[in-house]
Image (cartoon, rainbow, N blue to C red; front, side, top):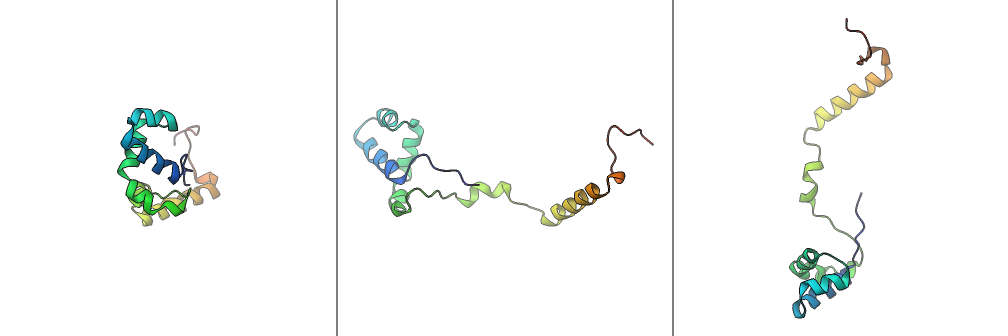
Length: 101
């Protein structure tokens, strides 16, 4: 699920431009963000300018979600099949409440 951005590209560009002439802390308090956000906007000002027409859309770099991808799909499939099979046949399941053999 994508997060909804709190600030539009227009606001970010305005903050990046304002931070060039005024102190970053002052700009951050005016816009209601942390000062690190203003520094990030300044760093990505060219990309924001290029995506100015995108408006309020949010793009996530794919490298940010590499850890969430399935690395071993065959094993994941086997595990899923096992769990589904065990849920179908509850008598095959052992729980902590059962007496040991």
